Image (cartoon, rainbow, N blue to C red; front, side):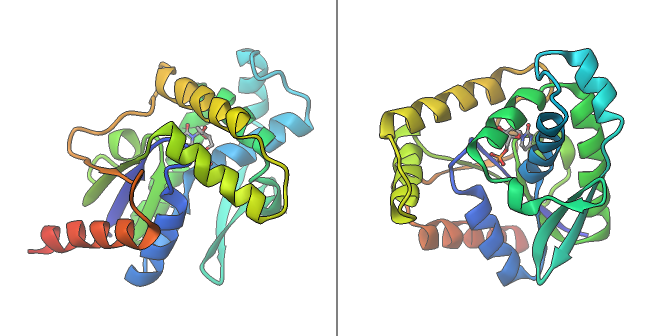
Length: 221
Ligand code: DC
């Protein structure tokens, strides 16, 4: 089985790019952030304090996460309930970032991610895919962009949906999340040694997709 790892900070465009590429290549798309978010939903629903590691550990033992595909779209099943529609909320992302530092949370999800990659050709995105989860991935991309570019994209997205948005708050949230993701002890966000850096600050979606397709072509030569 072949896997492509895409890592990078929040808002760099990983999921948009990975989804498009997965369709073109006929690979499954594995969104690992969604798994951490599903864990976060469980902790929030059960009022678990994200700073209490012991409580998180006990609660994590009661969580079962499964991944299914419906028309090619990843569905996350949390203890037999499809929670996919709950995962994108801003608060869920913040909770996921806080609890993803605990090994009780990570071990479980990393096992599931490796199982999926063993059975399917996949494009997997996250923070530690090239560095920890799939060290033998056939292509590793580290997708990044300045916090300004990422905040602007998020701002434009919210405004286009008719929602309220404050640019400075969005930028601060992005920078706080970068800090948490890069400074945890276990599996922090880092560029794997053999990953190719792609800075998307000044590129549109098509340009990023074609850049990665070119990297794939080079691998196949
Ligand atoms: O990519 P995302 O915003 O959906 O991820 C949510 C949080 O989950 C992110 O802030 C950190 C964590 N995460 C992680 O620790 N490792 C991954 N492979 C994916 C996500």
